[in-house]
Length: 614
Image (cartoon, rainbow, N blue to C red; front, top):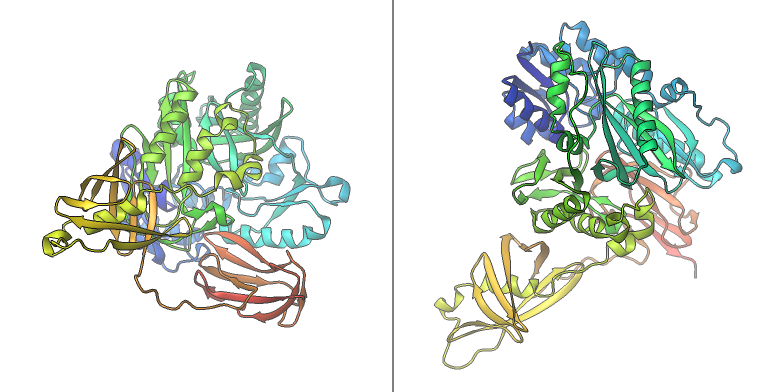
């Protein structure tokens, strides 16, 4: 029996595994980098062990340090979570060689399936080697890991070498393995997968299907179970293929077999030899705890002959600290508050007041709804996200709500090209027009007691806010009976709640303020000074860092004075385990190159200046 378990991971997945351990009476051990010294997973574990450094290559990818941490803390088992070393056969062997219980599949099974190239060979498929124009478009993929890292779509042969180099660098940074391969890119298919759970006694459970088609940068955003709209024959086919893949490598534990479904056919993608980020939707539908299942299987317990019956439908949305309207750029800052309505599952690695930094994935939380039908589950999740309190960096919350309510999604006609088609519409700003007034009235609460009202009518008070990239100015005044605003009746106003009535309709506005940031319901505003300071002026053609990160590469031969064309890649920034390409905005001359590889930059830092050809 396992008594103490170390999770060789961080954030949300570590917290999620710890939750099950507490229910099973198992003591927990966290490992943390210096950047994660005060992270939630390090705080909630019974014991925490430091991994010196911040970069994944120095910390969470150091299997030797993690095995030493297990020995030092008295752990007798290791759970790898997902990402990092979760599909590393060498790490699994090191854990077993140290006399510890490995909560995962046998190393040989990981070796056979964790590399996508070997998995394809096992399933009778081959990667592309000599790519020609006739093969385009193609997809460059990391052989190890997942989550969209080390993955690039190539539509022009001239771009292949650069994208291969970028994918190798990204994969090496995220997984410690820079191997990549090339395969045909199937456009606008559906991403469907099968969850399996297998014991050491020969029983394999296929736990239904999941649809994970809503993706950005090949990383899943919305997932659901079961996958809607599949024929009974196709469901049986993918389930049988998943079981076949598991039996082919004597698989033990939780795993996922992924397919791309197009034109009624299922194309094998890969087998992930680990728990998936989206496992909660399967848990909700089958009434299971998959982490508890992993632990019991590792302890030698057999599964029942047949899995439990599926009930209802579940949908999960991944809440990211990112700005979808700005090329999905990751965001950092303090998460002041995170809460969702009752009846909604929230898996997160953050608590109120935690900081979201630059070193790791920008996912804040997974939000999951379960209901008897798909329609009810989708409606429940969209409403919960809309009413959630998310106070902090910019997130993809509005995008998620609109995605869940989009006709293509509600009708289950989505595919992996959903955001390619709809992103501009889904990211159009639509702030609440009454939010600035509600913010101003909450701020003005109680001021009349200190001379705000007088016998001679005063001039209206003015407040300025930035909201959705635009400036808004509002006016109100203190009167004998309270606060007054043109065109809107102020029913109630205090520091936390403002009630307004317009055209006979009364609405409540919950207000929270943190410094110069104000949140009114789900709308974020920034208080602008009455007399703004002069802003720094940048020359036309200036390229500013859209996010905090590290300059990992400058285009070959690029120097000040180089001629560039609009769209040419100039340099690459790495932030939150992803590389972001910075391109020339116009055709002209690179008049300034202000950064070098290895340099860290803050948002708004000047990277380069391109002078347009007249």
